Length: 171
Image (cartoon, rainbow, N blue to C red; front, top):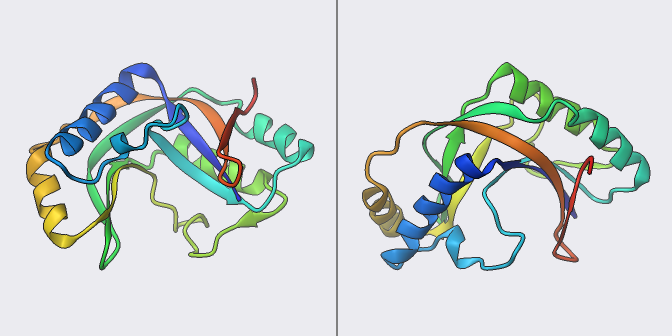
């Protein structure tokens, strides 16, 4: 399985990592606990079963508009028993068009939970996964008031989940 993701520029990445670190500092689940070199704040655009050279060419064309401005907004919660805490990425026209172009570029898109289709995608940057309801309450308190972050989605990457490898799209 492969994901196609947007990676943030350094100035946009930094405050998200600070939030990761705040959660970890109080003993809560946090993306900061994943210490691999490829772990970075990102926005998932689409999933694919496989990616080949033709997909790569189409993805390079689809992401040629990068960088694009983004606004990272308030907190967002997914899940019912175990929760994901994230920051919403405000869905601008440019971002929605980019996501649609990436999804269309894939020969074998995978969407098991119907999350990437038109009108279904919720752009976000994950802060923590697998939180209980109690931990979710603690996490929101630990983060306090979150301010909007105006920034840039700088580059696109492919993440090979099986091989744990990242590769950059378009160079």
